Length: 560
Image (cartoon, rainbow, N blue to C red; front, side, top):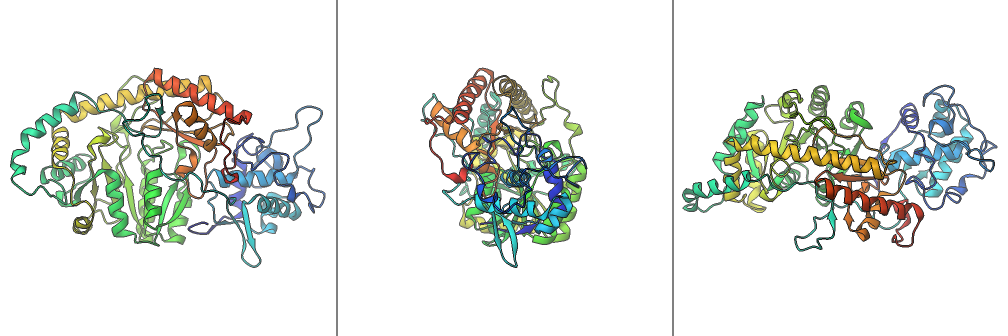
């Protein structure tokens, strides 16, 4: 069941249908089908008014000369035995794909049959038959007087939880692509710890609990923001146990159970699960395909109509898509949030990882990056920033921070007495040592070079072994968002587990079962291991494509 019900207008829905690429909606083996191709949606055949074999003209969805099947990406006939795809089925497939890719969230009320038919320039009977096919397949619910809204088929729970890291004592034969984190940049980290031990004695004479963080580290983090153009006082900083600790503290303080929280769709899996378990009502805001990223008109609409208490965004090399929001997008989003009274949580864990274009060996142009989100709200009343050294230095440090208005920091610090009291002292001293010396930039240089080489090795292996998989190479961050050539990401993940490679499937990064046709691949492996991981994924994809019994039988709700 959806957490928040929205509506999509007929013209906007037609544009979304028109933007689908050839083959997406019609591949019988794609994630957009439930069950076998010849059986899917047969309930919609009856009463279609003779339109089943026609290819009717579409209006606002694309070129005026396009057909329903053409605009929705349905392949044309092949061979003498091929037949035209019924117009209602092409429309139903296109709508189903929009739900599965998260571009139309679950719980969205669709336009009335007559309204959509007028925009698409098809008969009302065609739209009615498409809606009936979707109801039969479990993707639409209707109630007289209330309209029709999107849903997903009933069945076993989808894999929406975060993917837990492999334990340290796990089988070395398993290649783990579930965690987007790199080994520590050495020798810089070890040197920082050695220096931290030298600074430790004065702190051992205290109780060791610093709920807001060590004053020296708070000052160093504040100075770093100031140097980046966002004047900051130490009173605006609280050190946390990683970025997740910061998000959890903010969710407890600012969004009690039952409150609405807007999230990008897709978004970071572990934060989505954290918010679910906190009782938040998630409001997904679909992202655009490709480098455009954020859909600002949709964000303005959601913030205005849903009035969420919080919004969680990753503007800097978004996890999982890798998109970088530009300056104007950031300014507009902050303005819209301020107008709606929504507090924006800006996750900056990837901000230190610009990598440059593929194949480039030149250092990335950090001066050309857009301003930080907080620069549009330096007081911290609307934009609350969450940062961390987990991606930029090492996840094992477990040191993050929150930047907000001093009053918010005071409230967070007071509430922390009922959570974890504070972060480890030695680790904070080590991060302070890194931030206040030359080691920070040296460590980041090592990190970026390694991530860039890993990214290029992974994408080269994917193009060689899985050429039908689609992705946009990000210019930063640590993650690649991959469309799996019409195959179920959940089935690939299941098959991959048996073949010695772990990947998180797309639905983990969505709300209510979206993104079944995707997987997220972090570029955390050096070339030989990356090639081996892709080789195993290719074998997993072949098992899924062939329907081999070696692949576990997943419930129908996985939409294999």
